[in-house]
Length: 117
Image 1 (cartoon, rainbow, N blue to C red):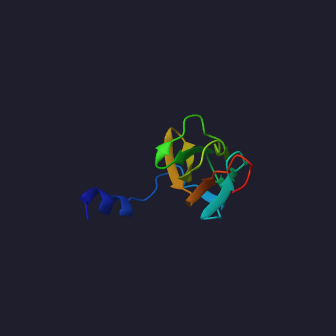
Image 2: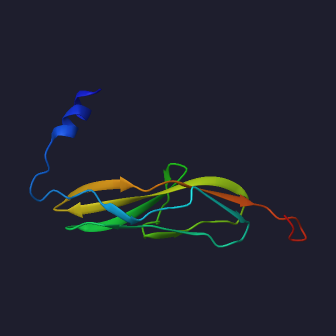
Image 3: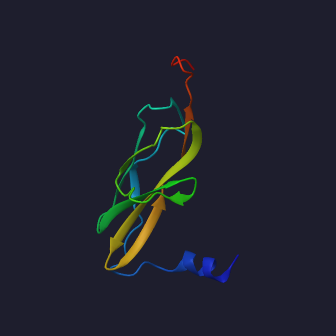
C-alpha cells in the first residue's frame, strides 16, 4: 500500500472540512435497454449536513461537459452502449469531498426502416 493511501485512512476530519455526500437516490438499474430515439433520463440525489452538493456526470469514464444536474438525459440518437455514473461533490470552506454513484449501462438498439427491432 502506498504511504499516502495509508495516511489518508487515518487522518481525522478537521472542523470545517466537508463531509462525503450520501446518495439518497442512486442509479438502481445496472442496465437500461432502449431503442434509438427513446427518452432515457438518469437521476440521482445526494445530501450533506453542511455544504453544497453539486453533480458531474461521466460517460465511459469521461466527463460530460455541462452535465452538472442531478438528472441527465442520455443521447439515444445512435445505437450503441455506454456506461454512466454521477459524482456528487460537497464543497465547504473551499474544500471538496466526492462520492461516485452506482454504474448504469445504457444499451441503445437500432430499428429497421419499418420501425421494427
